[in-house]
Image (tube, rainbow, N blue to C red):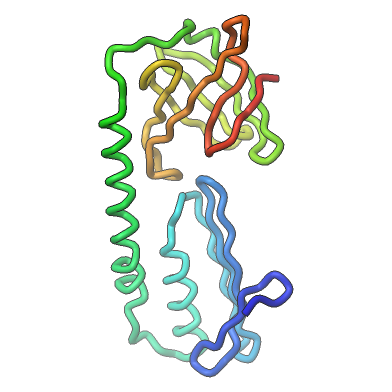
Length: 189
């Protein structure tokens, strides 16, 4: 069930309230079992780290029931192997669809600027050593290399654990006007 923003379910005969939160590169889960006086909060600078569920339930077992018998890590790991395989297939498709031997429309310095999105915030783009450096909300920095046309691909990092494609859209004057990332557009400020 869902109660005032919390998921609620019976766990071992007790009500467990919990809620997750995710943004690209950030995950969280909070769980409370009031009758056992146990609360667990898990935060990580990672993307799609569903180990958070294993940590929540393992902590509930240990501190609420003094029980260390269930292998939550193993169960969650097995569950997400299928997702991992689908992600690999998507990455393979991305590689196959890449158009080789293209060049960006502009010199890298002409992509530099601040791009904003009401939902995601700001991306600061800089050029250095034949790469684009993207800083998301002054918090997280990604390095991107030319992929094809006006699309750049980030290096894999510990937070996203994937290569992200970042596409620049040009305006009628041939200048960088926006970035497409996370399925949304960021407009040049």
